[in-house]
Length: 525
Image (cartoon, rainbow, N blue to C red):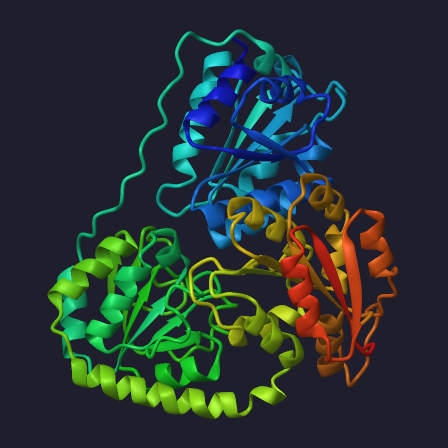
């Protein structure tokens, strides 16, 4: 058995079922091993950045590790945007980056695809390591599968020289270490005391709640305390956004109003990023309880009164036990939220993007998944498109990577084939990853792709206009006929001009049983 065979077997034993990749001269042993291994599906992408993006979204939806396999040199460099997004959004991802022969490492002899991949991946991974011996390669992968899920989940990269892949493997495979939940320690008593004495507590829930699968404990504690819940982009949906204590995302007016009235905030599994706090302008009370599995975010932006290092699920359950319930406060807060939401919904027809947000929410079932590319549509949809479960609104939340939406939708659909999945993207983001229509068609991935086409980079244009007295530059974006483009890849498509017909087009796409593209032709910006 080659090292390549051992690595593939180890992935299978660890529960990996899908690998996203693109072959090259340095991956031949790994791809040959995949070809001979039943139970593992290889998805052939058309660009390596999409391999990382699909694997990222697949892992988010499956609550597992996403895996991508790429060749040396440019194959590895092409993954960087996708890996950078997974790093910024704190999602588990294993990158298997193949490499030149070990005898050439660090020599600069001019071997083709030669590059220092350890240095390349260092800024966007928890760690990266090059396997210089057969057993080391297998041991590194076992460590990677555990490390990417432990503590703060983030990508790891295992770099595999071609000669190491081909070498004979040892007789036994290592076991993958189990990932255990971090039991909370210091700070729990102080946190419980602050919450017990609070008059207007709020809870700020981030991606750590979703990763810990602690949405049940979150809702139970919110109802127990009578505390409104606001969320980060990665935490969106951890409380159903039609729950009586849901204040929705932290940049919305309802959430900010509840924060302004709060005297204690329990922040769980969040980092107070620039996006989540609208440029660090969120009104956070001085009595801040910050809970995370990683102490790095503590005090980075808002000084905490109490910190608790621990798993979100365990902390939330323990606080529910330790703090007295307050049914009267729950009723009062729910009534306040009801009034705020009534005022907000009265303006719904005037919301930017309402022409798409409303019909999409009406057509898509509660468990449906939206993968939203970055740009104008994200800014419109993120605060206003209601989500009812974790990881049903996927977006490039922190690194803000254009082109993420279409590959992410494909990864999400492969992770949850029973759920309807819609990608929402602007024309700019779509043109950065439209080649993945070939992947979607070839793999039979039944996603519906909505392209909002206003022939411009609208978000950048608006920023320029605000800063430079109405001037804008390099933001006009003429493009191809998107319907014809999709059909050339074998993807059925239609164009909708104006607002009428959007819901019907979405229904046709979702009921088709195969990939479908809907171009929403808008007035050029």
